[in-house]
Image 1 (tube, each protein chain N blue to C red):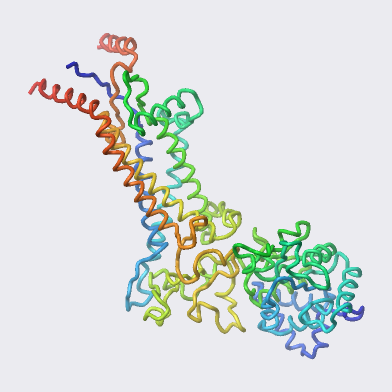
Image 2 (cartoon, each protein chain N blue to C red):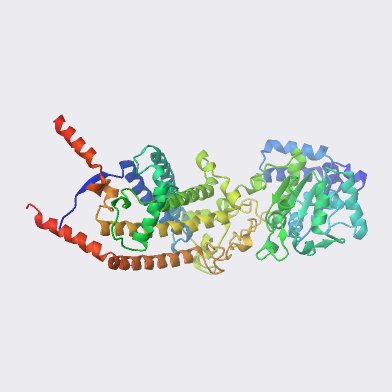
Length: 244
Length: 374
């Protein structure tokens, strides 16, 4: 049996990886503290209120994590204009022929689990696949909803201009009740997203063995050597040889 | 009924004529300046304006309402406002308190509307039913909508008293059988001050009237048309039980020890954290108390749609369209459970369907393992 050659490709640059883990961390913290704020546990205590501040601390953590989440999202938005091809905004844009083709392929092979007679290597995505790209666009929209409703609810308690920029959100949505409802319900969509996201990452790593999971730590994925432009690779190797 | 003499009086003359002393008048000016959030140096201006300004003609309309706004108003901290507004000004027209009735009353209203076109202030208490041609609320043979359109035409400004006129209140609760509609959705071309609350605080009502008189213009309004002086803070942010909230000390039920200790009512459904009003600072009944001080959570009566926003005594996030008992958390938990099951099923299906591919890959991997140069 002929075994295959894989090349290591740098897919996720450092800022993308930092974004990913900061994002995961802040979403986790925000969801946990958010649910505590929505329904705090009962604590029976004889202490005076002046001696305790744990609920205030939970809210402080929530607000701090919100700022990190927000600024981190801005960093990622910026990087989509200066980063490599896998982090570019173009890789999230689903409206071209290549992307549509890839969406169909992913739905057929990975979601509906069909098998192809002669698979085309080019169908295997190096960065995220097109369906994943759509899920990240949804996540980005969701993040915007959370940022606007969250800072909208927060604006009133702040004296800083940044949260104040969002003070129109609450009147726009008709009041705190509606704003809070959207803010709370959207959290669940983050949770559903996370379930699917983590499962599919494991699925791809398990099935394809190209380092899907570890790519978000080291940044590398493995790509079949046939995918690379062989001529160019050889030429580069030759010139490297000459440089020695 | 309005006579020329009465309307040509200044506020001060009316107040003195009503039997109040100069001292009472100054006390009132001080009170109301404080409620309006003015500096003490402005008290003079308030007093001066009331002395020199001729009384504004006011028409006070009652549509779908319970008159709790009027009740609240006449019980405000200092009776002068209610006296001058309701005993004198509103003589022009107010169903509940005017002496005239029937055709006489309607004639008085017509006279004011014609004589002071573009000058009078229109106060509206109650929502306007639009369903079934507005037949659910008719006065003097005309529907509330007809009355409103007529009387708003010549008004300088409109004050929408209470949640009915501002948001629709209880009668606009789902399914809103009479199509009860707040004023700002009917009248678009006039400045409207929305003063939500069921009822609004009497001092707030008085403060708004005095503001219009003192400064000759409407108070500063927020994006929902509410006066900023009274509606810019949540009840929660001015609540005296707030330290218990920050300390995480909550009453679990209304009869537990925590409730007796006066802990925060957040977990028994207090809507203070989502409600903009002055209850925590101005309070009710001459500053005696307010709902939370009396041990009952805020129900959010000054917020849009408060009646349909979940139970009063539980802290839940209701999701519209998912039935009455469905909260966002229930829906979320079910969705997460179904999804987790689906993913598990997918994993099993994948290991069957992709078996051949997987075995080939494993075989190649094992082969390379054998070839390792160890």
